[in-house]
Length: 150
Ligand code: IDP
Ligand code: MG
Image (tube, rainbow, N blue to C red; front, side, top):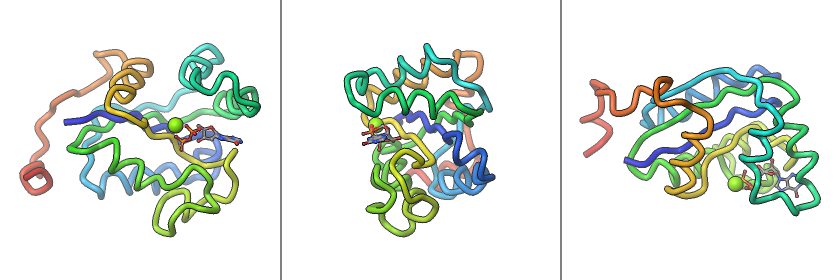
């Protein structure tokens, strides 16, 4: 089982799309093991996007993520990283496939609605950065699991 951190970003929360976005991951079969509404502080935002620190959009990206509450969700599943990223769609919403979250709800790269971890390693790291162990229901037994996981 892989873990991925999903962030329903401030634009999506403000636009009332939180439920619609969560529903897509749930319907895909990914299992929610943690979820909370939170206001990200600057230190956590800079840590989360540290890989982009030298990019020209870094400052604006941090301001965007801390500008309003986000819904953070920890998901578990087989191929959770790839499955979540395909459900999210390409980084630039204008190029994202119809049917993906960004392809259905977004237009601009700086308002692209949702984050998903990009590797198995980063999934573990990011979930641990946003959730304490006590906040996670890791490994809970979902009754439909045998109809989702072969
Ligand atoms: P990802 O979210 O699809 O993994 P990354 O390349 O990891 O995309 O970039 C992280 C986030 O930084 C993007 O989701 C987007 O919000 C923002 N971002 C990336 N490139 C640009 C840019 O050129 N201009 C403005 N924001 C950007
Ligand atoms: Mg990324």
